[in-house]
Image (cartoon, rainbow, N blue to C red; front, side, top):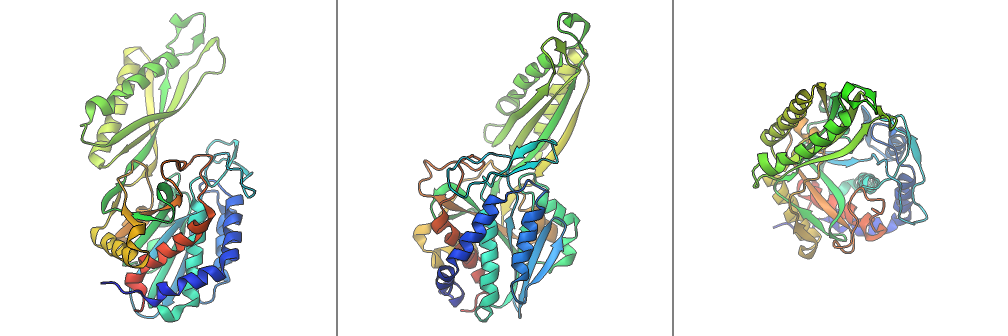
Length: 411
């Protein structure tokens, strides 16, 4: 039976005393969004905030940063927050809405940028908890690692920090935790799940190569636009006819680019697919089917060999049973049973597991509600996705402290 540890009991007055500071910090992140792997200003602000906290070791790890709070003997607990934004134009109407633009490294184009997935909220939560733990060291014991990770949206951030040597730069955590603000649960509620929770996913870029010609002489070429149209229709049969109805899976075509003029049959068409599922076996089957369909249809009409490029590889998020049970038990005891639930598996994806997988560390990742009514809440990545400022700003910090309490708190 978990008792109310002083570590959590002392949080409410701290949050009340620091309310304006936290609001100002959150709004700064919201108004200064940056695209994945281009978050230099955001990282600098995080490091600036951390450098002002006494007795915190700030470790630069690739495009990310880790704050280490060592406080005597005990368990090592890591908590992750992501801090990249999206190429989306915000449409929320608030006076602190993002008007930022940025040249995308991926496209070379200037695009609108906004925090339409709540990563600004995640970052503010974790910075708030770092400051709280640093100023209340008498209430806990152990080591807390605050992992600020870039580029979640493209599945590059965790891999970047692993490649930059995070496993050798900070202590191996005994447990790693993460959370995401969403609209699928009520405001300030949390929901956990044991086992597979977020799907693995990939982006597949397909280049269909035809033979160019004049629009009036299609017989002298091989039209990649007509070919691509046929391919895309056939790809829709992968899930419906090649994957068991008992296996969750998605194949979606998100972009198509080809041609420059109405009377020119182009040389090639490039399109991108997004695939999602819950096992490597199913993903391999889907990718094999994509390549088979594209290649066979290309060869059937005399087109040149197509090519396939894979990116944005998200791992399966598989919550550890023991860790998740302890987190859920702590949520129930500290937040109240009425604020705790269980979420259904998502076909959305997260690169959160990349770092704990590299450490070999068990983990738990949960969701927190940022909107009053899940039935009317906008989806993540919507131009209207803006969590209600209060009590979401407080609830996220409460959830983190409640989650770490079983391992760090002194009862």
